[in-house]
Amino acid sequence: MDNEFLETEEKIVKMLKTVFDPEIPVNIYDLGLIYKIDLQDTGDLFIEMTLTAPSCPAADFLMEDVKQKMNSIDEIRNVHIDLVFEPEWSKDMMSEEAKLELGML
Image (cartoon, rainbow, N blue to C red; front, side):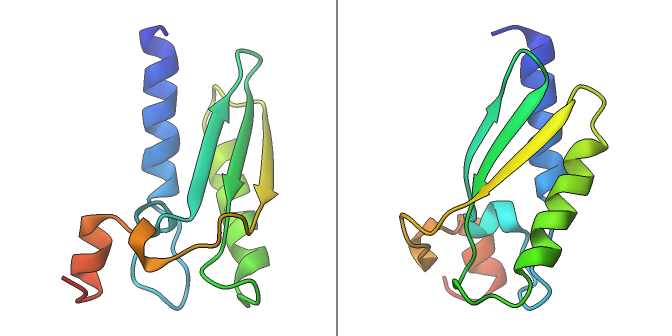
């Protein structure tokens, strides 16, 4: 892996940390909603993500927000978001920071 690739991955994570579920004061990355980030040499970005609940009313908003923010990164040509519910999200997937923020530690 070259530095340019790692820098782009850092940008992706940094951007994902600016996406918030409207009902939770923690970003989707720290919540553990991002299962996979796969950046291809072609500039195609594949993101596998989930929601805190399958019936999440903010699903469309979150996916659109992720897509727009990923498209703002110059190195990314196409964004593909796959919404999955396996494995099912649980509070164990949250970062320590997220648990702390939500008073769970």
